[in-house]
Image (cartoon, rainbow, N blue to C red):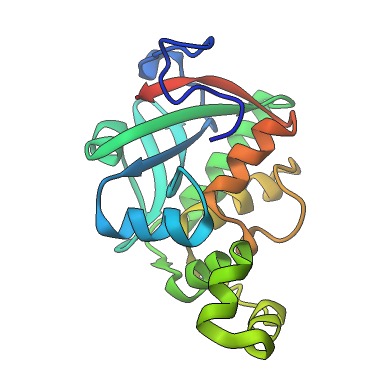
Amino acid sequence: MRNIPLTPKSDGGVCIDSAALESADIIVATTEAASSRFIRYSTLSDVSHALLYAGSGRVIEAVGEGVRDTSLGEAVKDDILAVAYRHKQMTPAAAQKIIQFARKQVGKSYDYAGAAAAGLHNNTGLCVVLLGVIGCPIARAVKWEQPDRFFCSELVLAAYKAAGLSVVNGNPSNAAPDDIVSAYSAGILRYVGHLIA
């Protein structure tokens, strides 16, 4: 992660609990699972997952079984790192729109192809190794967006886009969880704190 401490006890980081969160806060996280390590490797990142805090101890996230509304505790139970951010231009009305959009997606399938494409989009070296010098640009030019499926960061960023708040440049379907950390580095998001460190 850039410009924030991985250990909250140093360099100005802070440990928080769910009481410090507000509706529509973005949480980026990672686990020790093989799938998490693969995502971190393929996106050259320290984080592998993104989710939205929906208020009242609930989160909305896109995971292997699809988009779900679950408890924060359930969502982060295996995490070794979870960091919360808040958009600097967040308003109660925008937060409501973000959560409404995300809730409408609950039950939709996980977008495996889109997640893989986002990884290739964010890691040129891996893309070239897997698809070659010719195949990589072709794969990056394809529109992988599927309106009935979401991967984690795509869900979060599409919800923000639906509310008129920009977090990243470009299409949410090309974004990885690390792009959210980059939005913090760019001054778009503010650091709320570490839920798990």
